[in-house]
Image (cartoon, rainbow, N blue to C red; front, side):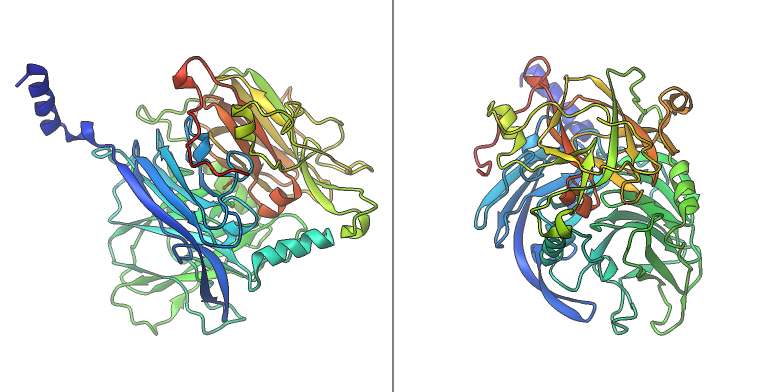
Length: 556
Ligand code: C2O
């Protein structure tokens, strides 16, 4: 045997870790399924007939191949929320941004490698309001042989929080667009598909989480709701937060989690009682005068050996406007920033961006909706108009006329953003992107506006994680606020709440060429136009350039 081969064989035997990364194949069939929830039954769009959908498992460095086939009447696309998609924007999924959607009867194969990430993420439909029922978990395990940086739990459980409407969600949003006003709030929140015994349907049981005394459980929490930030707690049990958005954090204890749509949070729970049933609760957070679904979804932590009919220990939920509970959770989040998992916060900035996020009124005398002034939403006063050709295709193939590159780096009109809004609430519309050179560093301050009402906006950036370096109430002050930025161990994530009437500052490095969507993860705001895209140019050579599109990429 050739000496080199012999060494390779020996190395492979002793260090199997070297040949570990695998290819994982999944088949996602998008189908209509009749599902009973809340004493009503209706057909919903699902993946493989499941609600929530199937969990996708991978290890860091694995390649994931998902063949999605569309069997429903809607066009469909699937987004792997939080997966960085290094150079593989074609597999990111937002319809008309990185791909044309998959038409009825057709398939598309998503193919991506999970690099430098471990933890919990989610996948969801990224077109219309289909993600209300088309969503599920992504579990990324650390590389084989690499332990968690926290005590290994005896068991892991995926917990998906969502919202349920009795009527069809496409009808809900279409009616709202016709009226020009806000859509109906949901009829219940759900925990792993079940609302629990809410008043309108007392017979409905809830999700049951069986536990054994003395064991520790890792709960992989996902907020897959369309429009609601949620508090989550378990009666009588402390939660230890170890990870958010598939990045490790310095562990801390809390009794209440805040989780916005698109965010994920891993917590350790020790089953430290001898027996009993304990209420698990998910309830809304909204600290602005905006209507929300007030119902608390409940589930049960059920100790083995406890009779089914024994009483459940209840827990009060925070009032929906509990800003202080939300703040104390957010302020406790810090990147783990260990030697093995360092926080690589950009210390210098190439692009200093200031984006206002909020609502507006479109004065449109000929519109029936809103008596000629329907509600819209915008970033820097631009209400994003969805193109009919995907932006990434237009960029890659140099198709002109699809978008312009003049997205403003700061608000076009200066006003007291967090105070009384100006008289003219009209936004401009366009399909505008902001161009970034490969590997440039970006500081982006997201400023809420009080137009119509201040409101907490969970903003999601595709293609990147970012560091949340600063946060405040009122208007951002570019002279004084940066002095308080945390550039050492700020939490790293992909979705962040801009506080009601306040701002957050994030930093990231544009090291992923492609077209990357940035939008509010409250679906109603995305629909209204609170979205834009970054165009990150190729760097030098093929390793810093977008890969060519796959041959089955759907056509518009
Ligand atoms: Cu989770 Cu663009 O979305």
